[in-house]
Amino acid sequence: MTTTIVYVELLDEGVRVWRPAEAEELGGGRYRLIATPDYDDSTESWKFVPGTVVRCEQVDLGSGPVPVAVESIPS
Image (cartoon, rainbow, N blue to C red; front, side):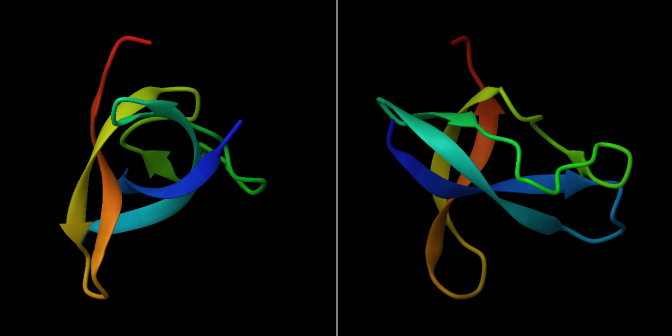
């Protein structure tokens, strides 16, 4: 399994915040999000929860383009 870091938007933060998350590369621009060791859905509300297959786009978050999860897709 090949993994990479993708960014997932956190909800209910008051400002836009992206969380780096490990993801399994599935090919074709698809990734399956993997829970971080400290993932706790009572303290962070991810736009896409771990286990979700997402499509990513390259977005500049301030230090250059990074893969950002933009939509969930059927696995």
